[in-house]
Length: 227
Image (cartoon, rainbow, N blue to C red; front, side, top):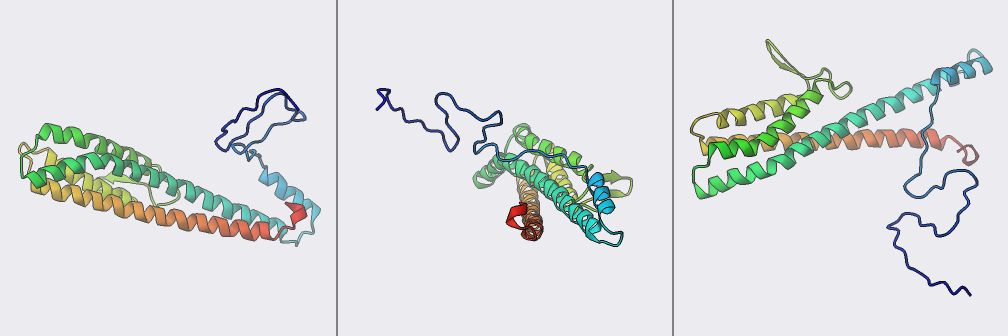
C-alpha cells in the first residue's frame, strides 16, 4: 500500500489527472471537450456521390435537401437566440428605471428629470443596439428594420420597441416631466418587451424542436454501426 496521502479533489464535474497520463498522442477528452469541428466540402461530396451512383439515383438530391434543411433551422435558431438575448438585455436594463418610476407613482412626488433621463439612458442604448442588429437581420424577418421617408419597415418586434422607446423619450424630453404619462409610457414599453420576449422564445423552442426532429429522422435512418 502506498504511503502517499490521499487528497480529495473537487473537479466540479470536470476531469482531474494526477501524475503522468498517456493519451496515445491524441487529445485527452473531458466533459468540456465533446465535439470537434469538421469542415465538409458539400459540393465535392455530392459530386462524388453522383459519379458513383446511377444518373437517376435520388440519393445525392435527397442528401443536398437534408443539408439545406439543417442550414435553414440553424440560421433561424441563431437569429432567434440573438433576438432573445437582445430583448433580455433591454428588460434587465429597464428594471432599475421602472423601480424609480413606480417609486414616484407611489409617493406622488416629482422626480428629477435629469436623474430620470440618466436612469433611462442604459435602456435606450440597449434598444439602439437591438435596432442596429435588426437592420441586418437575414432569416427571421421578411425585411430588415429601416426608417424611411414614409415611416418604418421591418419586423414587428423592432418597430414596436422603437415606437415604445420613442414615447418614453418624448416624455423625458419635456421640461416638466408628467409622472403619470411617463408611468403609462414605461409600462407600455415593458409590455412590448415582454410580448416580444415571449414570441421570440416561442419561435426559439419551435425551431429547436424542428431541428431535433430532423436530426432524429436522419440519425434514426442510420444503423448503430454507421454512427
